[in-house]
Length: 331
Image 1 (tube, helix red, strand yellow):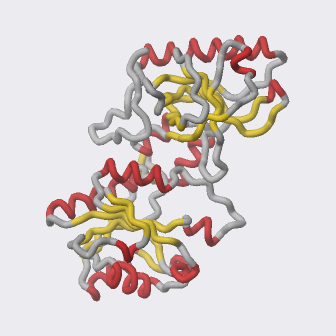
Image 2 (cartoon, one colour):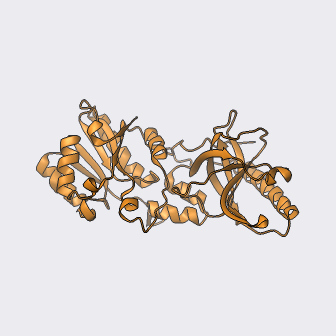
Image 3 (tube, helix red, strand yellow):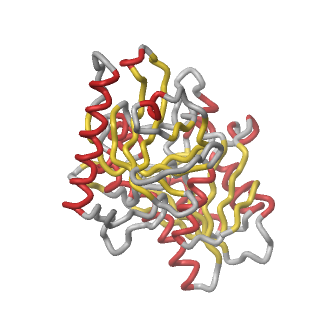
């Protein structure tokens, strides 16, 4: 898959072109249904498939007073879309000029003039154009007028509720990482560079890898999680990860600290990936470092028990995505 910055840079030989529209934050199962439909159509016609998103996310650009933390950055979405078999991932800068286009102008100037689309694929709740006044019905009308196919993919549901990025955000903030993985079709993951911590974990015989928590991206809610850790020389490994502050040491800054099971080594400045498998417990305040040390020991024992009992099953649908992390089956 090729990442392209700007719709005007798609190769002219990429025809016929079938394009999925949306911002696809999280690239969850509902998004995957839209993207896979575009891929299938392209393969049937010996054409090319693509996804077009805006960056920054329109909600971030248009409503800065209501900060939106994203499930996935551009690199994350690119990785997941490549797994789905897309030919192109097009990132269009969201400028004032783009924001001011009416639905008809967007269709004519971007979809027709720049991309010469043969088909467009959207979810049934898709909106576009100035102030979001365009809809899937708008696309269908202009598709007939201008000669391109429009496919509207129904919203997917899970337990009777629509699968959406906002629903997944709420689940992750509540610590329901395993349940969120069912909707994502992969384990939720984050990546960052290992930075110097305070050395407290090492003093307690449980050294931790500390990574910087980006404020632009959503992290699971405060708590302790069973995770995997990848991008090490001989990984992946299992880990016990604390997301949040360290109230026992009167430190209330946001931190992400992972004790990597059965690992010894110095990994400062390594870029590591943490995948969240299951929440172990909420964050607690302890009366002493000794009590915290005992709790960490219990967290590790609980993690090993879970690993042995469940063999940490992957999201075992035949169509599950192998992105984010490689999940170990035994220690």
